[in-house]
Amino acid sequence: MKKQFFWGGSASAFQFEGGGTEGGKGSSIYDIREKETGVTYSVASDFYHHYKEDISWMAEMGFQAFRMSIAWSRLFPDGDGVLNQEGADFYRNVFLELKKYQIEPVVTLFHWDLPYSLVQRYDGFQSKKTLQAFIQYCKTCFGLYGDIVKYWLTLNENNLGLMLPSMYSNKKRRKSDADYWQYQWDSYHNTVMAHFYAVRLCHEMIPDAKVGCMMASSLAYPLSSDPRDVRAAQIHNQKVNWDELDLFTTGRYNTRMQQQMKEAAITLNTSESERAVMEDASSKMDFISFSYYFSVCMRDGENKNNENAKTIQMLYAAYENPCLEKSTFGWTIDPMGLRIFINELYDRYKLPVMIVENGLGVKDDILNEDGTVHDEYRIAYLREHIQAVNQARKEDHVPVLGYLPWGCIDLYSASGDWSKRYGFIYVDFAHDLKRYRKDSFFWYQKVIASDGEELGHS
Ligand code: BG6
Image 1 (cartoon, rainbow, N blue to C red):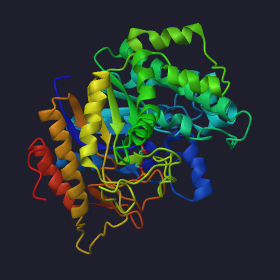
Image 2: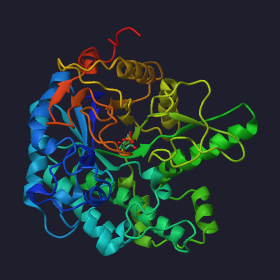
Image 3: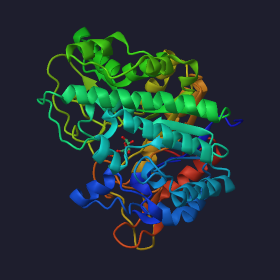
Image 4: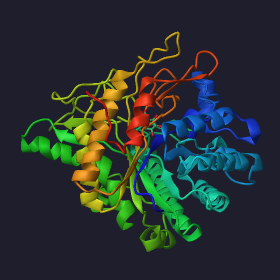
């Protein structure tokens, strides 16, 4: 653990790996979604068959770390039961390939692709049986890869858990349903326990590893200096950003969360032994990782629906910031917000931070006949955000562990299909999945080589 800061990129299994049910993989909820939506997650960027090539591109860019996730149903086709050795071998080969180029794997244990069998049999995370299956899966991952993977992330963007209706359920529930909030809290609490168990197990099984949570940052500013708007922004930040981190760092639901449960007449399905795990020192994470794409504004009273509220990252109503420009996807571009958020996190929790998602997703990348892609808009976005990271590291002296922008090789969007691209490398999804270096590839290569100093001119 000598390295202080990692440059690299990030992806998740269901959006990047493909490989369908090849090699004995079981279906995840995204394989089922594919049947409903026609979005071919079973192919995605086909990292499954291209991993050697893809890792060599990463090495050419100078990557020092690559964040990826393990598809739980590739190791355990039914989520629990017998290990699928072919799946286990696949990830070992990927990690070895990364190590060949001195690229550190940063591995998310769970990036939303719940094995479908757990949904069918147990109605997802609301059941302790799914939690037990997750514990078995974590033990297996740490046992299989603990010699080679030293950075682990528990559950992707779990702070959005209470807002994601029926994500892991067999049954579509509406807020008007009598069991809606009980189901939400049961599921949420089990994912919280999944986090604590994973951290504790990781510390026990791989003492020289670091393990952290992964949260969706959602920095809210007050729309005006009216103290009522300031309070509205504070409430948003508490609810979306801080409540779960308070829980993960203290091992206790704070009074706001307890109040929410009381108001919804929730009886939390928990026990003394779970409480002991939550409060155990070895269940406390080593760092906080997060995604950062945009900031929002709040004002007192009824908040208008954000025009992009339907995307998975914006499950709440918000106002747009009149001082900021927006991407073609309607997300505000706010590099200063990243610096603010990093500082805020560190001031509150005094834990090192890692940026594991950031970037500009657009539909505008054009592959020219000569194989070039001129994505100067992406370079402009990343330049400003990297400047903000540099300032946080070097001027504000926050221990930042790494910058791993999202979808470093084009992948499938969580809120759509493959047409929204983030990568330094273009994937020709419409034809043969061939890879092409974008202009940002060569730019990022220089950024990494200069430890973030050579950012080119704006
Ligand atoms: C994060 C998720 O919320 O945002 C990723 O962890 C997702 O899975 C990313 O892809 C970007 O969102 P989108 O909708 O542009 O794919």
